[in-house]
Image 1 (spheres, helix red, strand yellow):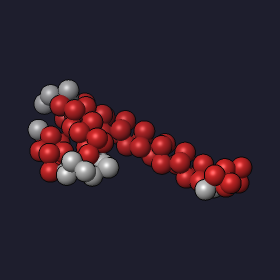
Image 2 (cartoon, helix red, strand yellow):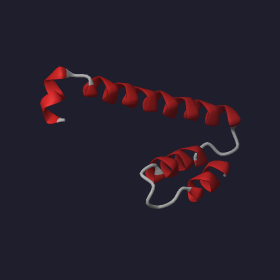
Image 3 (spheres, one colour):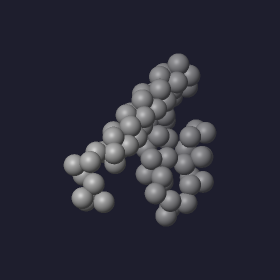
Image 4 (cartoon, helix red, strand yellow):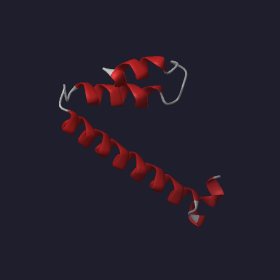
Length: 68
């Protein structure tokens, strides 16, 4: 429930709105099980970290410098 309330506070024009809504949706599926919720948050954090690292690696790739 807290994730849903937090997601509703994110303005509709914020680029992170879909992320906040997705996290709230994922967490709403775990019900009242705190261990499953923490596991889900860890999974989401791992996916986010992987995506951020992959993007950073792409930005540093000299083969893609011509596109920038």
